Image (cartoon, rainbow, N blue to C red):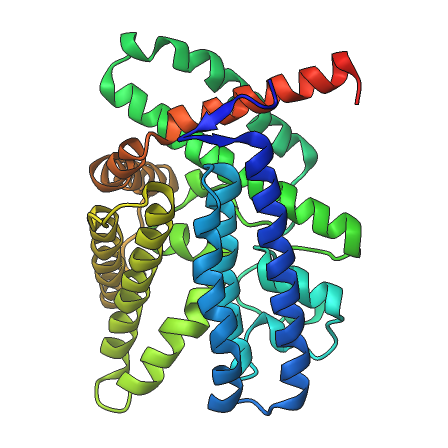
Length: 355
């Protein structure tokens, strides 16, 4: 069964071969970047030396076609690695740590991980995001296994209930994938890493959800690449509070563009810009939320249970409007479970037939 047609004419073996070639190219390219940065001072010239690598990283995911190998590679390479290289060109961001050896540089550059800094964490206003216990990931595994059974009855489910199932699937899958990558890096390199999700369903506001709980690595990269430069530039011509809100909105616009790019790798068709509206709307709402908080200045308090419920419902409803339709247009759930099935058949074949 390992040779069974994957989908769209691609075999599982062929996809794995392309995946290996893509990641060999990534590691070689980042090794070049590591060496070049030792020779070229920070600034535009270093950025120019990185441009061939940045361009290659946009191209490489086009060689992959699966939801999991292709989708995660696109996220790691075309988005995170490229943004980190842009920061590194100016000697900022996670790659600017001069103590990083080449293996650690490669890991930090191309994987969604953040090394814990015990010294700096004590000085930060926000508490450090700690690693999650094993049982937390075990629950996500059980959820994913349960979903394989639940999806058999989708034709009998109410559309809204089915949408909730899809959102649970997305969250569980993302946390498992990012958690597994971080665990492998930790085992191989002995690094203490921060978790990428911090129980987003406990968010007390949009600011809490996007800034401290949901996909924290992305927030940590978007801030220095988009928000901080916007704030510095706009603060010279606008009131700093206004500049900060514009910076927040610009950050969500860039996030929307990058999500459209990831969906392009999934669909290989012209962007619809529907997902872009999700992030534009959230950028506007988050900017408004910050403005209201500053105006109220803590004079009114709402029970945590209420604000948590409102935040989660708001994210889910807007996700129903603008995010899920694009995933369904990609047939994401069908393709994902097709990949689970084929991988399971391959593993069974190896176990029962021998290597």
